[in-house]
Image (cartoon, rainbow, N blue to C red; front, side):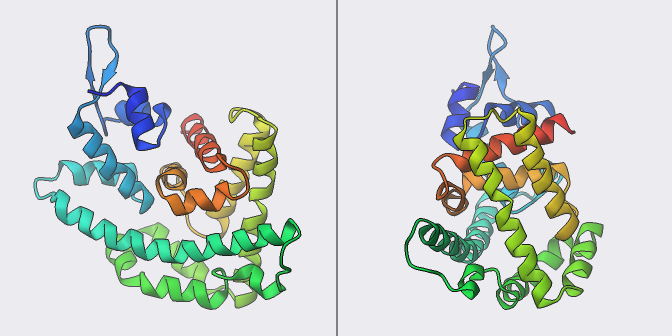
Length: 254
């Protein structure tokens, strides 16, 4: 049996997230005689699946429906997730390399040509990444309003617009780094303003980012080592800090 803190540490998530999952009935633990939450090995396995699905941007309501479906096959689901996550990892690994090279350049290392600043984020690479996952995206979200909005926005963007947006998105990380280095609590208005700006940026330029989807992004930053490396290259622990700030933002604005 695990306490809520033990399971959160084991899974690389937060106790706040586990309490939220309990509140909405997604992962409901047993209670001991003192009222403390106690999680079984089965609960840990369920949490693993939930976090996997969150990395793939599944809404919490959809995850809950899948986990209780009679036809649910955990082994088949994991096999599919492994394939999808590895494909995503290849793409984001290139982004991490770009960010790392940029950091080295800022610290006085090898100068980067301007074009190199956007490796993994160029118009051609973004479109190739979208095409690679198009069938899966259509199968899962093709009928949703969010998918249609995303597809329309993407189709109407020029190469220059895509690369400008990518540069803006990278720049949004900078104030978060400074706040983390100063030890500013995640509840502070300055941190929450940065989180709100990032959420608004995603919502405005990429897809209709609900609080559930945004919460899932935060979880992905700590559950996938490549995303963690992307943020932690700026400052060790930044990914965890950002995720905590996102979860606080999502819960307080829900």
